[in-house]
Image (tube, rainbow, N blue to C red; front, side, top):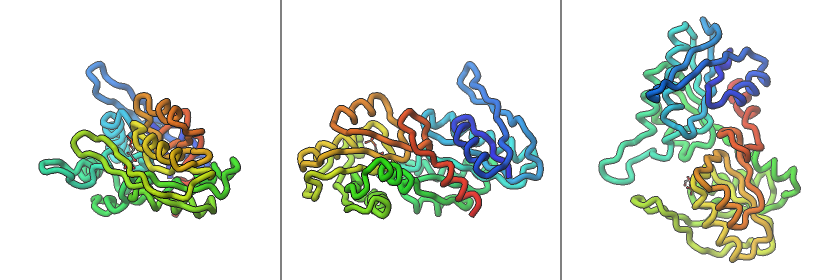
Length: 290
Ligand code: R5P
C-alpha cells in the first residue's frame, strides 16, 4: 500500500503513512491563472494499492477536482486499486431533495469519483451514513467522536453532559457519553430551507451547574452552536465546551461562538484549522487495515 498525499490533507496523509509504515507519494499541484487545477504524482504507483488522502472542505469544488485528477493519474499510472480517504465529504448534506427541482448533489459527486477511478471510499462522520449505500462503490464511515470525547476526558471533563444540537445528531452525544460517562441529550433544531436560518427550541434539560460539551459533526457559520449555547446558559450550565469533527469555521464563526459563552472549541484535523487539536490519523489507519 502507498499513501498519496492529497494537496488538502498533506499533513494528515503523512501521519497515516507513518503509522502504517508505508511510503507516502507526494503530489505536485498548482492552480492556473484561470482557476483550473493541475496535479502530478511525484512517485511510482504501478501495481500498488493506493490510498489518496484528500479532504474536501472549502474550496470544495477545487479540492474535489484535485481528488478526481489524482485518482485518474493513479489509474493511468497502473495503480491496482484506488481508495479515497475523504475525511470531510463535501456536499454530503444534500443527500436528498428537500425542495422541488433540487439535485441530490452527493450522488453526483459519487458518480464523478467513480468515473475518475475511485474504487472505494472512507469518510468521517458524514451527515447521514445511509447516503453511502447509494454510492457506486463500497463506501464506509468512521466516527471521530470517541477521540474528541477522550480529549475532553483527559482534560478533566469526565462525567460531563454530552449534548447534540439537534435530534439527528443524538447518536453523536450517545457515542460521547460512552467515553465521558455522564448523561446525554439533544435539542430540537429547525432550519428554514429557503433562508438557511436556524431556530432551536428551548426545552428542559438537566444541565444546571454541570459541564456541558456540545458535539456536532460540522461547524460552518456557528449559528447552530450559538443557538444551543444561549439555551444552555439559560438552563444554568456551569461551563460549555464544543467538540466538532469538521471545523469549517466560515467567516467569524469562531469569534461568534466564543463570544456566546463557549469556553473552548476543539475540532479534528479532518479539516485543518487552529482548533484541530485531535488527529484522526489513528482512526483512518485502523480503518485501512480492517
Ligand atoms: C447540520 O445539521 C449539521 O449537523 C451542523 O449542525 C450544521 O451544518 C452546522 O452549521 P452552522 O454552523 O452553519 O449552524
